[in-house]
Length: 282
Image (tube, rainbow, N blue to C red; front, side, top):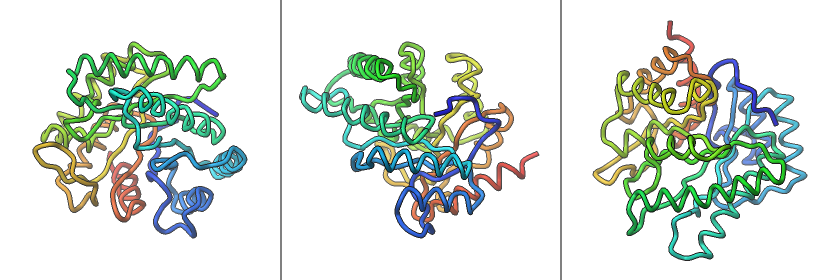
């Protein structure tokens, strides 16, 4: 597994491209390479069901095809649950994902960390930090160096503001943010202009240092939203998300890392749109 900074931005899909020969991870990697994309997020959103042997094999294929991998942990995670068993299982799902990701050679894993429920944002932050410290201690004891990246959340009921994730990343070694710009737009009803994107990137650098912009894990998609935030993902051209302004901001700040497209239903179509648009920018 390589954690070296990438030369620039790589674009890819959240999950196996629709046009792949099958729904297997290997077929997804092959299709990403055929399309000329650079990365793919392996989706474990309904459970980590990949065997260690398959993870090693898929990781070798990805390395050979020069496809950078990341992974998305299961949806069933709430590090702020009132039920101790649910908190325990949430940590286990993060650990399971990180272990398989390590065998895949993935750079990082991402996940939705928690819900506020009836708690304050401060109390929820404390609960999430406490549990992630335990997760990181376990992984480092195992020699697992995969980066753990809680994601900017699209619903206002979810833990995961940019400020929360930057503070968490500053305070817990091995943790960094997954910046989902579409979720942030849906959550705030704003954050959809070049200047606002620049402000986010400058805040990341101010809080975490230049290295944070040199190793980003970004999510982008078309998105529908309402008063409570995210409703559903959609195609970029069917949404109001100003993806070209985001790409210009990323280029102007010389950001590096992976841009994972989560548009639906034609995920690789929008990943290619993002890549082509970015490469056309002066």
